[in-house]
Length: 403
Image 1 (cartoon, helix red, strand yellow):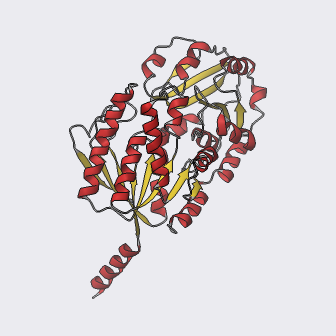
Image 2: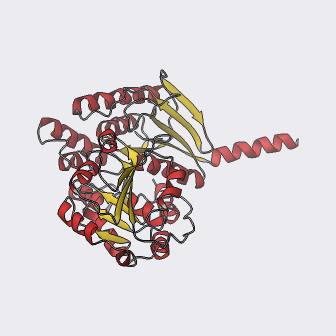
Image 3: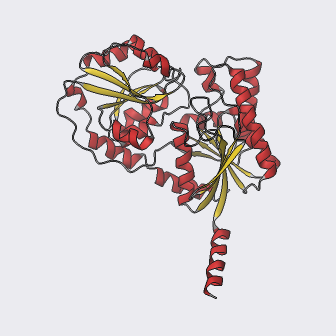
């Protein structure tokens, strides 16, 4: 009798437990801001009593090769504490050739179509946009299966591709724009990571409800420990993707770091090998680390570096929030809304985007006295108070439940 009552209780719990599907092109064990962002979202839904099913490609980013342990598989199913993960086949690539990248996205889209037709899909579907083609496919399939669509917009593609020089206006660009607008108009709720993204969507006369969803990190802020008082050497650190958009290779080539200022680099990406081969004093490459280990390493440094080659409309690098939560003042070199955030909350210095001479001036004049402008404890306190993922998520779920 007792076992029957327990079974009935469990069945009622499962009936009451809300279910959602999350579709993303990036997910752990892949590293980077996009993967961390999606895991934080899934974890947030799980804490709000949602059962989450994640659909993503077999892990391949940023190397463009299927990770060891996943090679040779058409798909892999994993059971986790938040629900299930379905990792689907794709043709991996990190090529700069847009047609090769397009083929890679199409391959995942084909796998996604098979998943929709073969599996039972929850009523609500959260879709990570971009890439455009994957987002478009997921939105189209969700309409076909009459699902509620929540579109999570982290970058304004194809506009971001145009600003980074990866795309040019023409027939291909126009097709991507039409796909983008289709995704917006067919969504039931749109999440945007910046005010600029939401404004861009409003300018298109989109009437769907909008929600500002910043890419705040979700980890316990570490206790600030006193660093070595010897400030004869100031250590700046960059941790993230090593690609053309970040511009680390150009910075390392054109900017001279003095004997008193070092640049330390962690990460992986298309420019890794060239950065590793740079033979310049006071520039050090340390490889790629798991996130928890990386956070411990980052606390050893004095300044966190956030660069972009060009100001990208709508983009707010999540490194701003992550570095400040660790207690590091931010050296922001990317322009846009992120620059406004750094200045407004007084969590670091800003330098005009792509102005290497201004960056050189900052490096040349950097001193221990300048570091005293920002207290590690004060920066962390501001971050914890103002960049709170849990508070943001509570508001999101209230909006989410009304759809």
